[in-house]
Image (cartoon, rainbow, N blue to C red; front, side, top):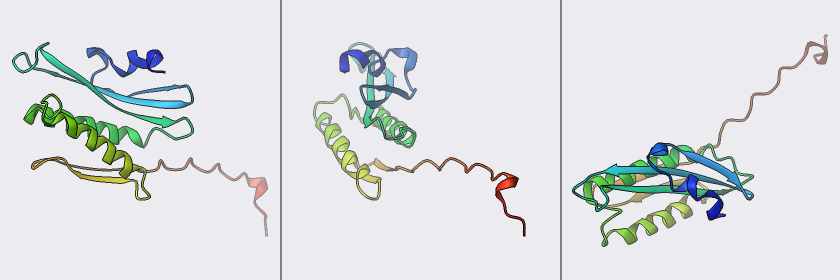
Length: 145
């Protein structure tokens, strides 16, 4: 599956800061690639990373788009401020954050409140999309009294 979808998950500059949804193999793959350009901090002059979710095909991906956007923006800010993603001491915390988020979003409340470090906190909640509007009732279906 990764070989078929990797070009949509790990993208270049063209799709940076865009939410991408790929539906294949009975699942939705949501990804938000981010890029940070800094010639002094990074060996290759920039850091490209992507945050993503994998959902079952029968799950509506729309409620996850703002959560993914919030998470990727938070990670980007933390990287710019304190090298959260690239520093060897803080890199293991990324996996802990993602695992905690998985458990929290799959809970009954469908929300997540995580203290990431002394200066950053992540608060997200999944909201179900509104139901489609009910079709209008035709005149002939209404009884006349």
